[in-house]
Length: 176
Image (cartoon, rainbow, N blue to C red; front, side, top):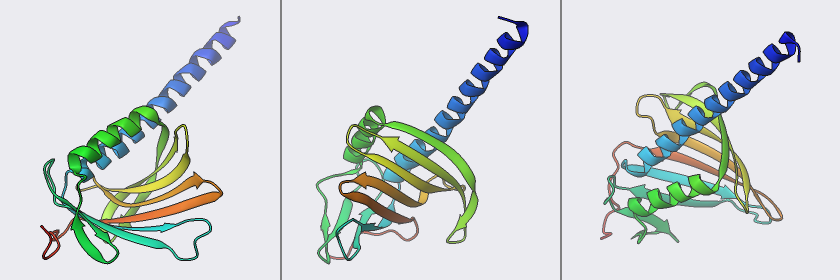
């Protein structure tokens, strides 16, 4: 092999390694932000549009913060305390990370509800589902502010949009 070809091979390997490390770094940012969000008090608002369903499906959840914090979900217009807590969410998150191939990249900076955010894309593949998403990570707190996820579900794709609010979070009135 000529010196030129050796140099090209080495440069290609360095470039591929750098690209893989950049993707790993971007995924780490997203996974760390997700872990932080789970243990930070927040109110999430989710909308899901699924194939074959005429109307979007909306849901809400309130995480009171901390590993032992309560989680409340809105079911059929009524708030209830979930039996699933932040510790369970973190365990599930870790299992998902282990069992899913992910590639991530930083795209640009934007503002979400007046807050500076870094925008990332993520592509994930598990045994059952492939998905593509865009996630806005707040620069000041390092938590997700917004997510849009397109997931391949038979017979088509489902789109989930989530907005996170970290201000004035409190448990719903009258729920124990």
